[in-house]
Amino acid sequence: MSKIAKLEPEEKTVTKQQTVISMLEESSSAEEPGKAEKVSKVKPVKIERGNLADEKAKWAELYKKYGKDKAVTYKMSDKFPTMVPMQHKVLGWGFVLTNENDRLEVLFETGIRMLISNYKV
Image (cartoon, rainbow, N blue to C red; front, top):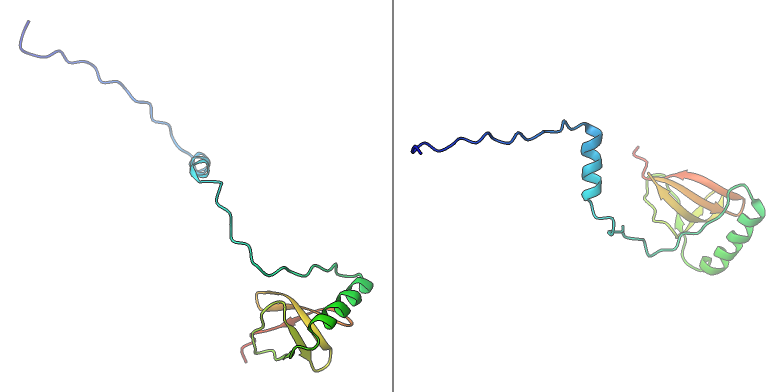
């Protein structure tokens, strides 16, 4: 035998062309599904819109519970948290149900109204 080593042909590896979809599938399978998002500790008030009798009953319940608290006076330029009482100069006493993108969903005695908050003049 000669001192020259036998050259073995290299194994050819087949490279799979990856598409965007296959990359997304691989990355989504690698993530851990066990992690959950934090849940807010404030229990939201759920009221069906359009059912005036339910809205009035819920308003009366909230007014009885929070009516003695100092209600925040509504101004378009102020920011408001959820789940707090509010006093509007025309609509009266209300309760802020949600605040999404500075749009307040407020339950008044006459029904649910959408109000603007954090308005820059």
